[in-house]
Figure: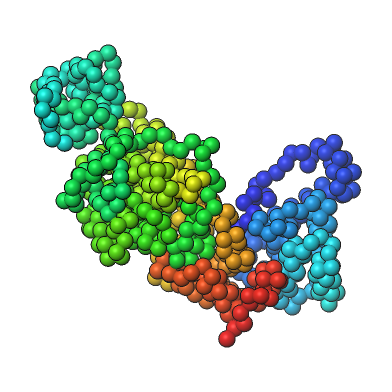
Length: 159
Length: 441
């Protein structure tokens, strides 16, 4: 199924992320583990695609819970990081600082261990996280509103 | 054309091929029209005084002593305000029993407006069809085709779009129209009392196919007169561009040119671009908007005609039969208006973009749920809600028989969001949700 962004995160790649000079430069300018984070995010999307195929073949009940979690983590990255609203004045223009902050945040969420009783509960939970992250994307970086959504996100994860 | 007094008649052909004849004649201009044994022809090559004429109908049965009469000019159209409300054939001659048009005589097929003299398109063209206005908004000065299967009602949709659009002139270029379609257009335009702003150039199926090659240039010559000289907003309808390309194909094959992909001439891209690039927004308010129809063979968009068209035009509107609702819809996944962002949220309500994207995303979720269903799996509560939503979205918004203002389309979408989904599931910016959300009744 086609969805935004039009640049496919799996089919597209940059050789520059493999060059030591660039990795060093990015570590200095963006974040010490930036390239590692980008690759981790990319791998989550790749895994998400694989399990989505499995779920399509075996059905929602035919795969273990962990598959659903993997799928929804990839959706989280898709909706909160890759999808960018070109019509929105804030979301259409994100500074490197903001990208670094959001990717780190989303990866932290992905690292959080969560327990679900069934796949519907899992899906609904992540959909709410996605909505909060999207609202953050629509808010001025580190504004009051932005921090309020961040608090909502943390509260949600604590439960 | 009737013969004039003291007109020179040539009667000695030097060579005849499948599509051309050659003869010696003096004072002939390139692209000039002529008749050869009563058949219409055009000068395609001149070397010294050896003139080669392409005969549109082909050269079968042409004798070596055929009478050749030159018209003395390339294809041209008399332009004036009297064009309004009239019907013409491919040569710009009236076919409605009305008098010939008096006016300045202009050669057709000239260059398109210089890019330097153009303005960025910025005016929305509302059509009342949500599949267009909501998801693929049209802008004046845009060039966009309908991609449709031959059995879909594309001419009806185009006639509706034309009549609802707020424009000064509508120019119909009908190529290979069946007589039924020709009469349909005539009756719809007459019935709407809009005939005084409509000009039609029509080539019907029983006329030689190659004659239709003149139709787009005739229609656009008239369009340029009204847009450039009169600063009017002009909408040009071209149907069916696939039949136009088929005519190009016939000519190039008869001329023994080496065919390119799908037996189309190698110049297909340029031939199509020459037409579509006439779409323009002028600084003084005049504009030419081109809405064309490209019929597909079995839905194949990789065929040379739709493929080349797609590189030239600013998007495409894809018609599809939705079997779930039994309606013809504007497919939101395959349709695109590349200029929509110039007006969305600027000339329409602030929530337009988010509503549009969310509605399409939820429709995509419904498509996934449908696949699940077809594969024999149990559907989740969300899947079921998606499927119900998709049916209503398809009937109330995507179907081509919808005719409502844009604000009402947006309100309808909000109503559907509230009916089937939670606020979080839509993921729309909170400020907009607070303002427009409609709770389930």
